Image (cartoon, rainbow over all chains, first blue to last red; front, side, top):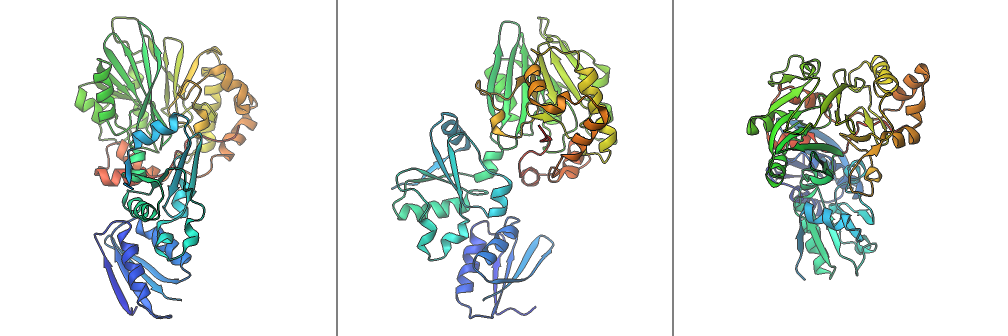
Length: 75
Length: 376
């Protein structure tokens, strides 16, 4: 999946992955896609909650070797 | 103003004192609804930390200006961030240092009995609804159902000037990781559990079925293992001096153990029936039942511990009076609800088949207790 911006939040613990993602999201235009990579397990529920709360769209979530990857489309 | 960092112990002391406590829990709603800090006179509000990142002042509207706000999250990081934001806006604020992770490993000892021959302490792991016991006599102690933070028991033993000689798990736990084996290794005590609980286990243990009585101390502190199957097939309860019934996961203050965690719910329900109407039927109403779990803080009595006389439990739980076998079976198998998270993995750890590090152990134990059946 192509992303307009990629956020590397691997190794960071809560709340930093979402703080970084929020900054990146603010720089995007409507319809653009952000990719975020995290390693914090707690970020899985948090990203879903955050995306829902901010009325954006979670396009895809995947996990590979302990790295969680989220694709979020800006509304 | 300075932001205070509060420890789980301090937070508990405040809740326990009956003072009003206001908690702002900043985890996501799903995690909050699943598991949270509870207490008398405690008000908690859930606003996820990411809501505070939006420049929207309405998020602050339900927060009190004149009360101290204690911010709580999973591990402490988000709570600190939100506490700083609130502080900048002039709120009186502190946060729980390591969040629910710290709350989960907080143990609170309560003395139930102190007489010359026998001392009894209940150790309450509030976040998990897990209870364990120190039974002490003449400088020696038996520990029943210890949690994995064994330093709690080592410290208590030191404080009470007793040597831990015997350690017993009433059954193979499915909701939390046992500290039994580790505590035995550190103290040189004997670790007992029923053989039928430990099939294919790598953890060394002394088969409990070979010890119908465990005697210790120079005084006659009589400890008797009373087989009480039902929750798991090798569950036992411990009857101390014919007065204190350490019931494991078989009988709770608010009901009975769930028989469904082995895939044989109906079969195990029969054993549970026999336990209630045969094994335990002979125990008098004034025997004090001290379980391994509680499901709700309302089960903590006026003396600060979880326990009730058998008479009171018989009176307040309809299931204890449901002597029709078929109706009984229907009730206990029908009401179990969600299974404890990760229980299959936890069972394997407690058998010594799987080993995990502290971080993984913490993660596996996230969430409340789900061993008691609510059907009163």
